[in-house]
Amino acid sequence: MRSAVVVMPTFNEAGNVRWLVPRVLDVLEGAGWRVLVLIVDDNSPDGTAEVAEGIARSRGGVEVLRRPGKLGIGSAYVDGFRRVLEEHDWAEYVCEMDADGSHPPRTLLEMLEAAEESGADVVVGSRYIPGGEWVEKSLKRIIISRGANLLARIATGMHVRDATSGFRVIRANALRKIMDKLTELKSGYVFQVQLLYELYRSGCRIIEYPLKFMPRRSGVSKLGGGEITAYASWCLKTMFRRIGGW
Image 1 (cartoon, helix red, strand yellow):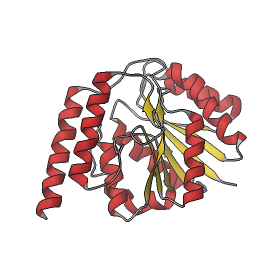
Image 2 (cartoon, rainbow, N blue to C red):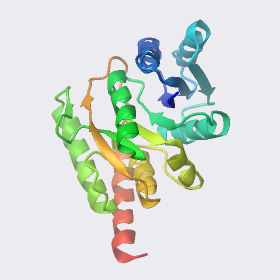
Image 3 (cartoon, rainbow, N blue to C red):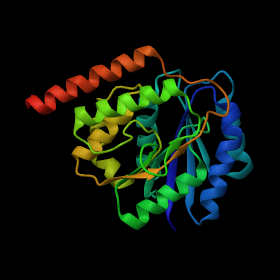
Image 4 (cartoon, one colour):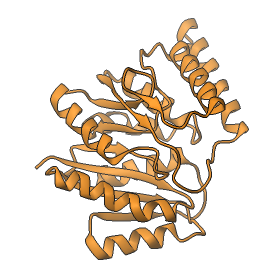
């Protein structure tokens, strides 16, 4: 049986987790996948962890990793990846997925099937290839995202149109090759590009799959100005190191 663990970082996402997690399980299990949704919760005051644990008790297929506070999405993914590789070695794929409803569960299934059919090590849900789009036409968010992706391509040399996308399918064996490097990565918005760059540098084959990026169902975005500044700084340093050979 094909198998995957979906790592889903959360902070104050109780309303979204309540409908999203069962939907992910229904879609993947219905297609014959063995699946576990791993919620990595940063001590959400709205009871996100308790909601997820309730789903686990009622139907299974869910595990909650509780953390003591808001430590950032990058470290949440690193802790989640480590849990998967150490305790769920049956999983062929490790998936990244936002808890806010912007990543459709049906597209996750299609990305897993694309990985199976193509043999790719990484499948990125992409808004910037044919068939992908922002369903919510927020001009500000699109401009920021477009600029960030242009900067990522210049800085890293990767030919990935949507390197900032947090919707991914990664072969567990590919992730194992770079786990020792992940603790060195920053934990904010830049994490997704750093992670993809490490996979790219390790020789992984990366493909993109069309993503219709949906509006957040509830709650608020957690991206701030400081995250954008840190992102730009990392990209510039990476570009100078890569081009200058230092």
